[in-house]
Length: 413
Ligand code: GLN
Image (cartoon, rainbow, N blue to C red; front, side, top):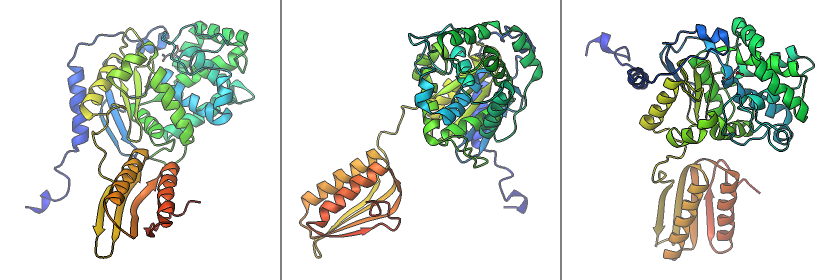
């Protein structure tokens, strides 16, 4: 092979190629849809723009189409502001103001439950109350804190589209009405303008699909931005947000979405959608024409296709988890039973280790038990406790040698 053929110069990344194929396939469909114009400035976007980006929890980004075209984040700001507010005030206090139930209604519905709370933080009524819960002494400070927090998710300082903000602030009377209703039921934590203006501003932050992918990847990565390594929120907050996104992220299409796509997601009327494959990817899609539910037509089709082709549905899993019990050996000469375990141990893995160990222990006459955990990289606290219990019991009857250099199981007390 000649020297100029060395290296990866002639290899195209197959993941980017796969995303490009999805983009071309979806572009060829006639999906219809209307660009949002109830915020007048939004009507000026390029309706043909179409981009996809995905970022893994290792921080690698794969992008295709108009992935660097900026647009306003709109309602996709909602789960991230929800995350920031949870981090500030905690889930219990949050629940005094906003619920976490799917509304089954449109994004701008007049949604208040018997306690006077909006159904969830991902529809306008709930999002405006959520914004009001960001502690601040002024509306400007409230928005500054929101912008700073969202910028940590995106790994760069996000700028506002002043024209879109002015346009929505001039015409956003329905949202002001929702804020006023929330004030009357006692759940709004600020003045009407103290919530509505920062809400309009957060919706007008400019992002591209690569930003969305990284913001989603930060949720997928237990709250740590996988590119910058900076923690945006705790793992628990990230989990709360993904839970609410799965139930409520796609407005009155949320149920159908979970069946067909199966990724927590959030759409915005600017044409963006962020979707999250927990522990794997964040995905951003952008295409402005919206379907009747206010979700990007091409965006929905893209994520449906990606979920099916790439196997990203949350409730899809391999038939058999890979074997974590690497070996079970019985040596009759020394009457020794050896169990070797490897990998990251979850509940389901511990169940198999315990089951196979007990089965082997029943089948053989042994006096020494060797439990080799040197290949175990991590175990949940519950799993560590279960295996610890097994070893402690074994010690009263046999000679037990636990090889556990990391102290993952033997180190607990
Ligand atoms: N700023 C928009 C509004 O409040 C956001 C709506 C959306 O993206 N669904 O109407």
